[in-house]
Length: 168
Image: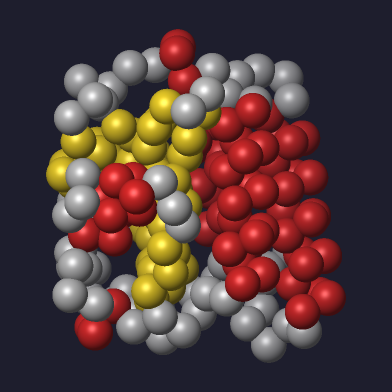
């Protein structure tokens, strides 16, 4: 199933519910960090057709390190507070940027990116990393995307053993 920006609110809510069910099904049999992050990023890539990046950065206790993703090459290390990913991690809150060309703290990795949403990954009050999504369309993310992607992150965190894999 592909997400479509022209979906009405009800269709978008239903789409995210299905996406989250698919994630739970994919992760039900095992909880390997790299496998789960890889499948989660691929699932999001298929669901969000205007994406230029769907992926993760993991926190190594010092900075965010590029983890499994779909899309073009990306920044490898991001300091806390730097860029939208670093800001989301530092503030521990979801951040939506409607137009990256107008955001002062934006780090450009792909010139096709026009909007961005970053969801922090927090487990047992510890920063694990962030879920980062970039779209080729300005204003591509709204309140339903925030809710759906925060639920997606919660499901991923619940079904993945991040202690199994350490970055750094």
